[in-house]
Amino acid sequence: MIGALIVRDVRRGLTGAAWLPIAFFLLVAALVPFAVGPDAALLARVGAGILWLAALTAALLPVERLFEPDRADGVLDQFALHGLAEESVALAKIAAHWLTFAPLLLLAALPASALLAMNGRALARTEIALAIGTPALAALAVAVAAVTAGLPRPGSLAGLLLLPLAIPLLIFAVADAYLLEAAVSLLLTAGAPFVAGAALRASRT
Amino acid sequence: MTPPLLRFDKVALRRGGRMLFEDLDVSLAGGEALLVTGPNGSGKSSLIRLAAGLLQPERGIVERTSLALADDQPALDRELPLGRALSFWASSPAQAMEALGLTPLKDVPVRLLSSGQLKRATLARVVASSTPLWLLDEPLNALDADGAGRLMAAIEKHLSTGGAVLAASHQPLPGNWAKLELQP
Image (cartoon, rainbow over all chains, first blue to last red; front, side, top):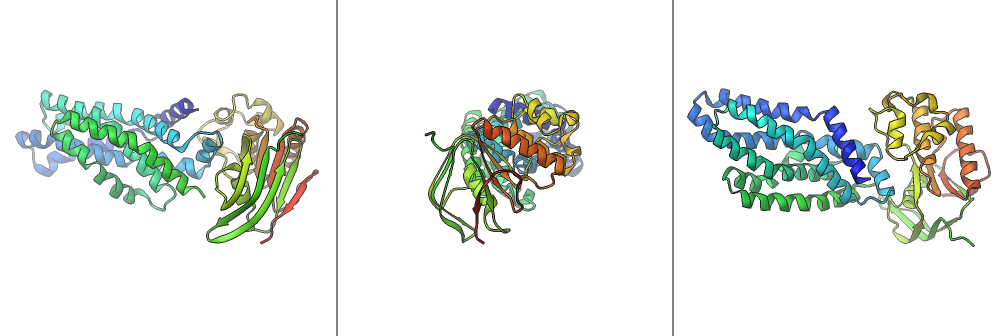
């Protein structure tokens, strides 16, 4: 059942809105040279940080479609009836969301780095940091989606919840402290299913 | 004597600060069908969700076997053809689709179905589930006479093979039902 859920969510993601956050990510990267001017040295210096800000905001976009449609449509209830723990559902959602989000994001970082005049080394460092950090971004998005599912207009609240929690990740990611970033990423990824599971149970009416 | 498929033992349920019912005893064995009636807001749907384990009782014990639930949420992927959407929940939904007259709609995307067809699809998900206990919340909503007849035939067949059905409805259901009336 968990495997079927992951396959279903990946299919729905790829046939649906998976491209939107990526397009948004590229758009943010493209806006920066207009905002700070075409100074290549300056752009290269802030490039990694900009890519991370773009990735964080792009991670917010899919929050409203991660749980709310399934909650409103009774799919979450049916999983519960099939004996699937809410935590397992959340874990499957994280896996599926990561699969539709992270590879495309890593790919989109290539043109984005060119827009920011980053050299090969800076790009490689950012790609490694993104690869380490994206599971945590997916996990945070799923946890926040579960907490805000069923609320009216959850988008802005989701931002307020998600972005502060991503700060430690951001700090270590742009400092190239891969081990510390991996530790934070592991903590967030491991904790998120339990937060999401508790939130889903509490929201059931 | 076979153990009951569903058992409420002195169950109380509180919703929104209001006690909906107290000291409720229900026992449903194979071959039995129970219809919960009562006015709007008397707790019929809550009783169904309690039986499903989606709500927790304030007091008392609810024991259940594996079950399937049909309420007003179809839980079918809207972009998929009906046959594929149903097969996410049941490996072989063909018989259930035939029983509810949905076979011609097999390749129609769920989002294009009418509300009556969607209700049939929801019921087909339960019929296809091969679980012994069916929970049906307002099963006649949006169904036409043909659909209601097909549902009753499916229920009849389920009961004759040792299954049990708990239904909640504000309108009478045809067939032989034990009744449980909830007070407002």
